[in-house]
Length: 95
Image (tube, helix red, strand yellow):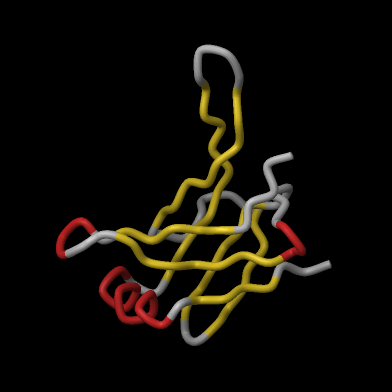
């Protein structure tokens, strides 16, 4: 089943400055007691072919295959202020 995406309004304007390309990859975060899955965001196309491609509102989104999202849906939003703005992804199914 394909992943559906919701892109919050302010993301499109921010991504125009970044080239309208967003790559979402898996990142394993290690702590002292366990490892958990999170997302890594990159503003360039992926180098490999292990990604699903989604185009929405002029934004090219690459999602690494094998990532699972709650109800097969992810939300892309923007956080931070001024030069510290960054894109975030919600909906990762960690368990």
